[in-house]
Length: 66
Length: 138
Image: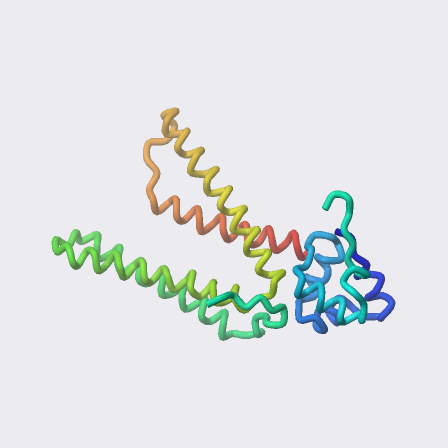
């Protein structure tokens, strides 16, 4: 699964830790999502979408291999 | 009681939870050492032997109970780390036991104590936790 987390975070000028704090996870969790090591569950994906005021689909995108 | 799947609850930075784990390890070790020492005296009373076994098992159970409590307080991401680590540790344990079994068949290994097996299982769990945590956090 691809995501635009790093780009969106840069646009907001938020650090990983700051985004993590806003959605209630650790900086490491945000880093793992950005590097593609971890796909978040629906509750976390929705919290992230809410933090950026976007839809989940606008941030996370399925790849051919998914 | 269902697990709370909310992302918002994480470990409070604090000594309380770590203290509970530490206490459980002390309880586990303490009851184990006490029970083994008593059993080495070969008590003849069945109830005494059974009681010592129960004491050691109950002492051990405080440790997984404390770990479970920690996991329930953690986020979805931390739980994933625990799950992957458990899967890795399970494979490593099976590999160890199977290899030891084959070594016994081949005559390279005479006997393997159950104590060695559970110590190896504990060690592999610890290493798997460390390795999984390192992978996801690096």
